[in-house]
Image (cartoon, rainbow, N blue to C red; front, side):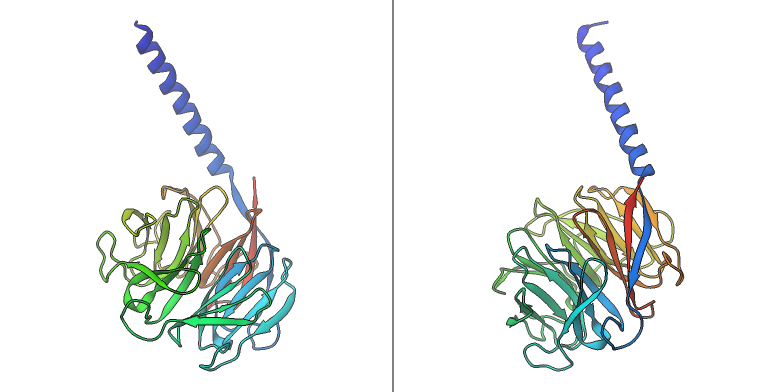
Length: 315
């Protein structure tokens, strides 16, 4: 046997061992219920259709309390800190805020499903500016839902009613868009959640197409995963999407009542949660966020349990 063939077989064997170790590690990984906060209502710390969740660098938790037309802020243990916003169309007011994102400087970006716009606040919750209006043109929105901010400060908005993703700079200036209505590769139907990885790839969950698509930094289609169903890797209706420090993709499955975790290529790794209202059970999980230690925060929204649950990674 030639030296080349021996080296090739050794390399193949080592590669197989590495793959098996990765699979075993993924199978061993799980998430356990840690705690919850929030209950149905309009008082401080109560929620009505929480539709978005995000964290700042200090670990504070921001909840888009859509039905109460406000943003609520909690500390890392779920203790209520403050609320801002009220129902209306003026600056600093909200009409169904469904998405929230926080950038590296602490600025807060809020999507408004009802007012078809994005509002931006500083880290002290002071209104800075707004952009967007109702329509189909560049920079306009029809029922915007989720939002994300990249490491470079660009703002990504799931323009749900227009079946597209729009991208803006940190001042709200339109940069580009991608997607059109349909079920083909690169087309979108009901884009709900959006996330951006460190390489600039854009991950989009589609509520109505029951799948997740991955695009490059310019919005060019790369790959997709998921189909309609309740099996591993399938979706009833994917809601929010988030990324952990390893690049794994976390997706909330609204109708099935669970969270699924995939690797960066869309390979199914694990799931947790069952339909219901017990601790650790999920009913209408709408949005997800991940903190620096890997804890997953799940907002249970419309028709759901009206609370935030936190799950911790474990062996």
